[in-house]
Image (cartoon, rainbow, N blue to C red):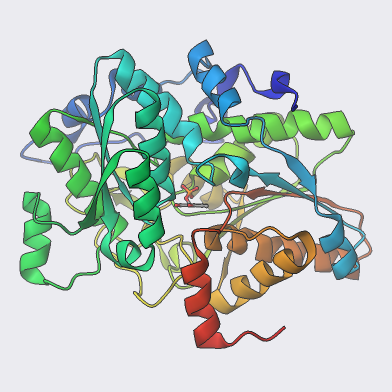
Length: 424
Ligand SMILES: Cc1ncc(COP(=O)(O)O)c(C=O)c1O
């Protein structure tokens, strides 16, 4: 039995603690309609309220805390001793293992409260997009917890690469479509220009929002927006308490970045508590947001239905290379994380597929866990930090957010393995 007292009673919001005010979401100048007004029709009311709150702590409803407990929170903090030994490092490595939830990733941490708030408001059907399928799976489960229907627009390449994710979403009761679809005006427009379009998260997001608007359903948001990072703060709050129980002071905190939600949820409570010396956000070299993205107002979705947010972005129409199987394909970085990276409070790194594949295999060989390809990016940085500590003979404490397991991503690893070989 885990100590459920460690499940936090509050979510932590970093917005009031940022070194500079966060540039607010805004409407495009001379827009034909207000995106901010439209948000009121898209998001459950309480989700919208939390998106714009400047309170530092927000109470987690008891019902949501119970659900967190039911899915196995607090998730384990695992000391990766075998990995340390293999690397011969004096550093200690800890995994905050979010793969332990029933859906296999951190995404359920925000799906549950969003579904709960929607249900409380009488919503019967929720809609979202998904890339790898982790978010879609979390929404399908959370919707089923509250007897709501769910419709999920899944990026077409992933839909084809990951049929098992579709199966699990359907088993939870979700309806899954490969985006671009012909169910929305935006999807039809994309298909008209290119019938073989592989899809992107930005397009799938726009389709989900349009579909929700057309049917009077509500849209659940999986990353990027502040409210999502707020809900994900349970990860970091738990990790702080777990490290305290062990008497450990963290030095380096590492996480991977798609839209930024697992990273923010894990790292921000440490920043708020003034713990940790170095923060590393890790992206994919194949989707080079940190190295080549621009810091500017851009739309989170390709159709531009959501308000503009100031973020590091490759552009709303960005389409990642189809052959690439490492995840982290979203075009932007959450506004608060973009700001912290720009202020140099958080470092970034980018790794290529081959490097993350090697990291995944090393973690499998030493610790046995199959990491999600997304998580493998963070693990690569952990290994490099541990080797650096070895060179300098430093007893650092490195903590990584192990955002998900890869048991439904074996197709991705198979495709990388075929391309680069399976050397030990
Ligand atoms: C296991 C896992 N980790 C990380 C991510 C990246 O998303 P985010 O940056 O919002 O945590 C995803 C996205 O689907 C994921 O499935």
